[in-house]
Image (tube, rainbow, N blue to C red; front, side, top):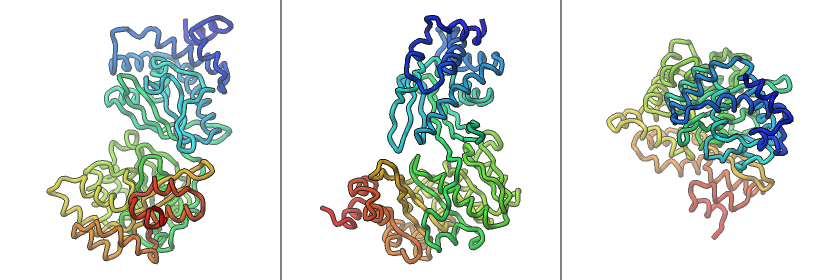
Amino acid sequence: MSPFETAAAGNGATSTLDPALRSESVVPKVLVQNAFAVMQFIAKDIPHHLFGAEKQEWIAKKLEAQDDRAIQVLRMFYEAILRRMRELEASDIDLGSIGTNGQIWFRVHGDKKPQLDLPEIPSPLCDVLIQGLVTPKQRMTLVNNRSLDFSYQARVDDQNQRYRGTAYFDLDSPAMNMRAISAKLRPYESYGFHINVTHIVNLQHTKEGLILITGITGSGKSTTLDAIIDANNSAVPSHIIIIGAPIEYVHTPKKSVVRHREVGRDVTSFKDGTVQALRQDPDIVVIGEMRDPETIMSALEITDSGHKVFSTLHTSAAVESIDRVIGEVPAIEQDRVRNRLADVLRCVISQKLVPTMDGKRALAKEVLVVTPSVRSAIKNGNTGEIYQMISEGQALGMHTMEQDLKRLALQRLISIDEAMNYSNNKKRMHQLLNTK
């Protein structure tokens, strides 16, 4: 019996589908029933002696033996869940393995909660669903590496919606997080950057140098970076190469040629993509993340060659970002990297998304512009002096995270408690807010 015959047999009869179908789900019942039929058809024959990677490899082979209709059923079901995610303005979805207790979780305005109006998906069935959302080659990458970064695209209401997915093992079973990528770019002008910062990030005014956008996961780094890319794409005839893992927003060429190279799909690694970009006549190279010493060295090399380079780091402050870049390379290389970084670094933008009084989130950012004094401090290993330079550099477009949090608090967008919670320097935040 095929999974579609299983679905037909389940109509009007008592079956193992009932727990999911009895819930007041916002997903159409027929989609739930058909998807569960496919998932159960594959999961019911899993040999009991298989665990971990071997079990997932068995599921992958069983999925490959199905016709395209089975995969389409799983994706239609999942895309109905994604539609609900967009309706609630959720940024992330989590599912799979025992860590979610069979439930589907959304992060809405910063809070992650289970969605009681969506069907529960037990772990063995969710293993099938997750693997059904990726390609056969990606399934093997997940099984072999225990982790997979990928992009996912769904078409809803005649509009392409893109998502950044991460599948990974959690106690021998795949779990997944997927983040919604906004279909609309945030206008660069809405960030309120100083004209000096605008000149630094725009190819029209500054042809070379390294610009870092930093922040913890979920702080809006990609949104800011895409706004800057779009500003360049709209203003300057140029060649922009974006290397991402995965590619999130896809830019439509305006005044620039824009190339999108996804790691694992179009290029094997950030390092390889960066090295190859040197032979592709770029004006701007965007490196999705400087996550290892090889990528850092490649980024410095391509910036040294006279190109404009943008990248991101998972750090929450400008000074921490500088220290992280230097600290990521072996000790024997650190003096050389310190000097190279000081020569090529132009600007660091560190940001956080802070809960607002009305239950949403506001962007707080710290901006460092590399002046001769900042450059000397980096070269001499005196990065501890840079914070004060930022706090005194407002005429050049600089400000600390604490100064920006104070601005948001004075505008009554965020509470004083949240300003304190999200500050990097609590003592300085106390002083700025004049609180005990």
